[in-house]
Image (cartoon, rainbow, N blue to C red; front, side, top):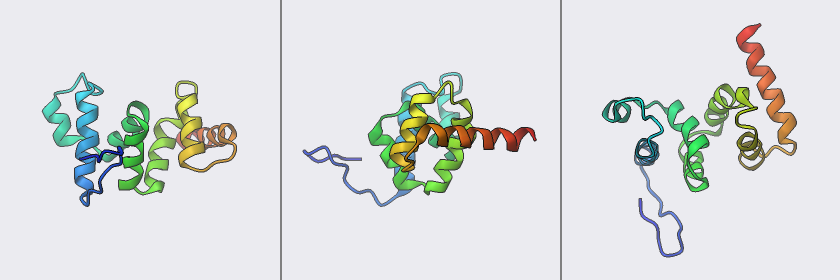
Length: 123
């Protein structure tokens, strides 16, 4: 992926190229350190790319994520993996809910999502 002098991302038409870029950044950053890199490259799921990009990569990469995946898919992965661990990801959950999901009251929204997800699992 190329950037022009202003730092803007040039458009890439192939979403697989974006997915490969994000996966490569995660792998090179040792986010899957306990797994064989080649195995991860071949088998990384969309859910793993979404969750780990939200947690470990920067805003530019998160913006790419929202260009290649539907919002509902990102929200689903976020709710199932990050919102339920709100104590661990409190700041990033608040940021994602407010900035990317357009929620006016992120703290109460995250709490509702967490409760809903936990109820789905245990009730």
